[in-house]
Length: 203
Image (cartoon, rainbow, N blue to C red; front, side):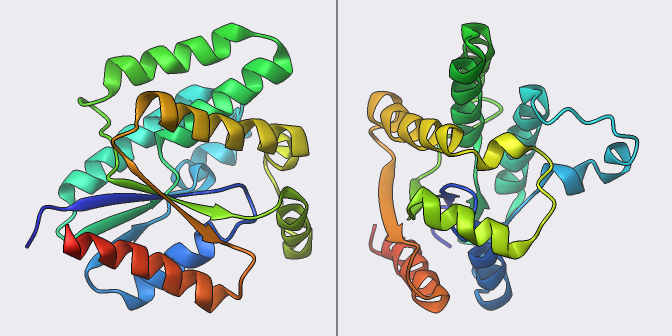
């Protein structure tokens, strides 16, 4: 087996990340498709109404767990729905919205202290690219309970996506970045993601 590859599926809520992770997990034997939701991970705690979804500490804990899962995987590829880039983007967006720079500073410090230790850089980011308005419409049609309304606010979503690209360009130029048109029919999006993953066979 070649060295394992970590690929992170990124994109705004409603882009289709969870759907594609599920399809890949069900159909591809050499890929670990891992989608961990904070609400499921801490389900028993959530029932007590204890979870504060604005507290970034929960998400940083999740990133450390994902790193362990990657290291333990026996598959050729490990595909995550989101990773620490989303936690950084969330902290940045909340810093701007709440006008509190300390929210982001704490998470950036965590990144600098943790990278290469309790978290590791992915080999590639795959962004599911979709206009925010279309993503929001998709979310509404799902009629799901959104535990944190901020996640589907347009300004928040814009800040997060702009941050992610800027962060990669500044700190992670060595990580490959791909874009997939997420407005396409789901099977086409799925196939495009697989083509990107299989591209690593040539490396």
